[in-house]
Image (cartoon, rainbow, N blue to C red; front, top):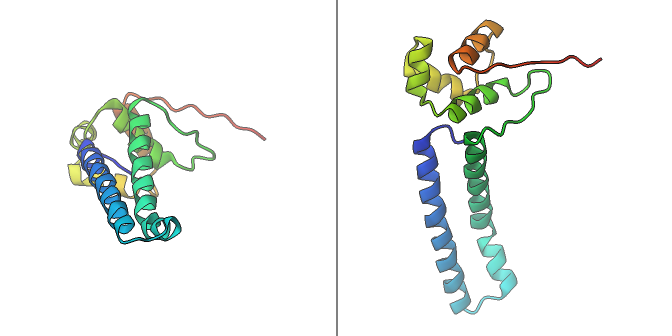
Amino acid sequence: MIRTNTELQKAQSRLKAEKNRISSQRKSLQAEGLTKSEIKRALDPFESFHLQLAEEVEAYERLQRGEFSDLTNLQGLGRLLVSLRIHRGLSQRELAAKLDVHETQVSRDERNEYHGITVSRAAGILEALDAHLTTSVKL
């Protein structure tokens, strides 16, 4: 998961580089006389990585637009908190200042997707992000 604008920029740059590398490699393999299926087999791992990275970039851009996944039984709450920070356009440093904690704490928490977070702490983060989470119970 891409968590910062810096990571987004690096991923976008890497996407361009990978696209050029795949294209160059394809031309090289064609020049060697490999068949289409041999070329596909050789390039599949690179293209798979490229697609995965493109999906991560797209997911980050969706978060910036405010497109969030639904939660079921609070599964994914940590990812939602990270997503809300991204959507609000706050850096980890800015969120840390609002929470009165060190930036490394926010970075570590986000890397672990707030695993084991208390309800009280989640409420504090939601408040700092000026976000409101509503729930419903279905029996």
